Image (cartoon, rainbow, N blue to C red; front, side, top):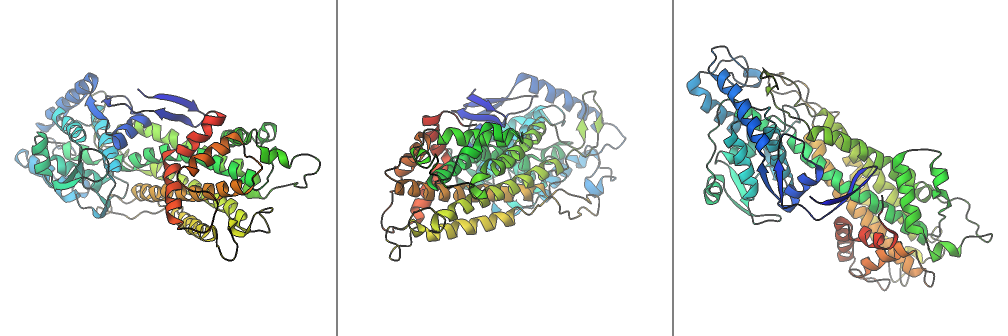
Length: 533
């Protein structure tokens, strides 16, 4: 298992990833999902899961022979749930269900999302609450281990009755139909017919039996997988935002007095306290801060974007903490319809509705937009000589001849504007489907898709703030920054040159973005100040 530190917002970081995870009746963790989705960890069903799967399948087999109709076993689906299906037609029924539901459209969904989706569906199968055969669960594990990734499309899920089309595309591939990508790890991979890919890996295509089509498509695994990936990434970005804010406060000759623990304790939000603690640690020992302390300093109050950084960042952190709570409850869930209960009943239910996940996906998009908004305001202050306290306009080397970071802020502003659009909730929408049987849906998949774009845009916004703040810190020489902010600046300077005449700026932004995405800048700062919260 990986080594973790824990903060008020959950696991802080993982040092390395596991090579294999055992999928059992217990909940998966965030780190296990990340290990499989992004780092190609192998999976296996543990013995307890195997026993649970076999036991629940025995229940389904018994009901399959019952002359009384049982939903999903001997009936049609959705609006056709009252139609009895003869025994000889039930294999065709399952096959038809998957083929008809594999109706996605639009761009391909990212490999890591599909792998997370398949792992989470396998996790539900492993609980023994779905009634599938052991062979079916083993096929999903084998596909993950063979790096066979079904091609899933952007559109096709309304976030109710599960992520139907995305899950159906995965089940279709397990049947040896449709198209998959096969690689030896990493993004991309060659597109191949699923039948060819399964044959090359020695995997026998599934012939689905009673109940299995529903079990493979009734779940919120796509939106939950994207939520899990997003919570992991946002935890890093909230620390990055504290680093960016510290560099901005420092380089704009702001005050750190407002971050004092006793002042923060007057409003005891845990995220705010953690953010303020990070700012104090990052700014400790700053020569720049020391240069304007004392009776000669005329700064009474900084602008809100500087002074209120812990309050804004902290609100986002607390939103993330709530999202983690919902995520962990969902990871511990067994979502299917109908479901095999612990006492052997097969019952219809509504646990497939994606509202709990859809809400927090939207909440996080709002938090990401506001975090980006305050970061852009801090950045803009560097470029205005009326507000940047002695720095050149736009941090240009030769103002007038050089434009400095003028247009970098335009890019940042465009990203923030996009983030505001992405913050419009998807979960307040609902379009009835299935002849009004499914008359209220969550749109959680759509919320998840836009959150992924929001996380990517936020990463770029923070990168541009750090790029700008680092240049300003260099321009404050001979005053010296804090050890932590200096370490982050120096890590950036390994990829991006310091102040000078204008140069092609897009590669600098791309390099800074990659350093933010990888966590390298936060790691550099922590090497000087210790672990951030």
